[in-house]
Amino acid sequence: MGNLESGVQQALAIARRRFPAGVDQDERVAVGGARVFVSSFDRPNIRYAVVEKDNAKAQLLAGMAGLKERAKTLVELVDGARFIVANRPLVLDEKAKGLLTPEARQLLGDISENLSTIEPWNAEATEQAVRAFAERKGVKLGSVAQPLRAALTGRTTSPPIFDVLAVLGKVESLGRLQDQVSSGTADHR
Image (cartoon, rainbow, N blue to C red; front, top):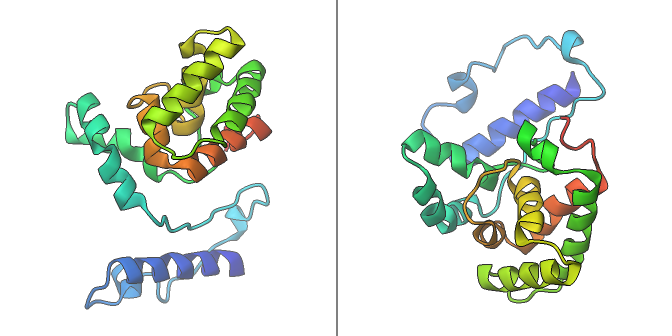
């Protein structure tokens, strides 16, 4: 029970910092004196973490142009932006899971090594590196870009993949790639 209470308290602390209000947040969400039932949810294989993103707003603003091009409605815009604020490891949709075969994961590991050397990190530099990598491997760009998209966004559709790399930034992009390279089970959460 301590872990759940700690998680709730941590979430409320983040909410208080991000959304200060005159009304106590505990009272607003009515958890102050609520009983907590843990026994049916006490599963050692399920972990929850509240993670505060440092630059989510800046990332959303940077990615907005590419997101707007694809979205016809506000709901589609929000849905398309989900990958920017998603926590790692990403939960992959069924189509993305299908793309990340063992061979594709190996390719992601290889391209990660190349991408880790890129400075400065931007759409143009990542595009040059990915195109050169595909050429060296003797594969079409799509054979590299689609697994990249799946690993970085959890989906098979997104804004242009080089924009995605730029918006997520080097550390987050390489981390998401490593998550998928190192674990074929990260998508079964």
